[in-house]
Image 1 (cartoon, rainbow, N blue to C red):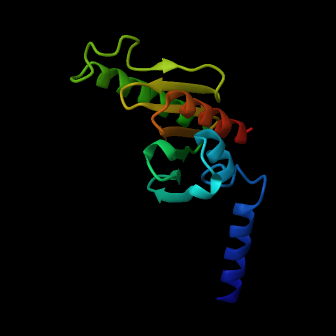
Image 2 (image 1 turned 45 degrees about the vertical axis):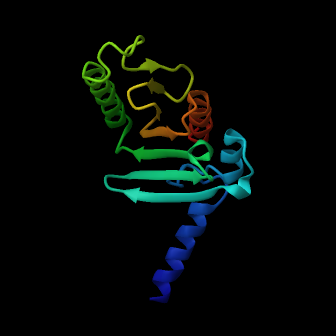
Length: 163
């Protein structure tokens, strides 16, 4: 039992160590970095993370309201090709959703648009108001705050942590 606790302690220490962004399921984003994006004091944010099925993590820095909250999900695929296929399937699903009510005829630029220079590929969509990027086998989707530019800046910051 003591051996198991020692191993667990070492694993947690490595997981939280500076520079361990590739091992941290939430990519090592700090409250100070999230606060800088949101324009709020770091002390006002509460970091939360939840492990979901299939290698998916939901990560957030929650403020007093939705405008002061950064929320994103991180998914690690088994390999880069799988992540590429999943993002292509996501684009297809957005196109289908964009042709269905209430979006039909309401998306002048289409269901999604490519955003240059964030990760290996990235997508903004008005269908659900999210920004999604992929770098290697990791796909990240930024869901909040509502501000599109802040979501893209958050994506840039997170993508840089995957270098």
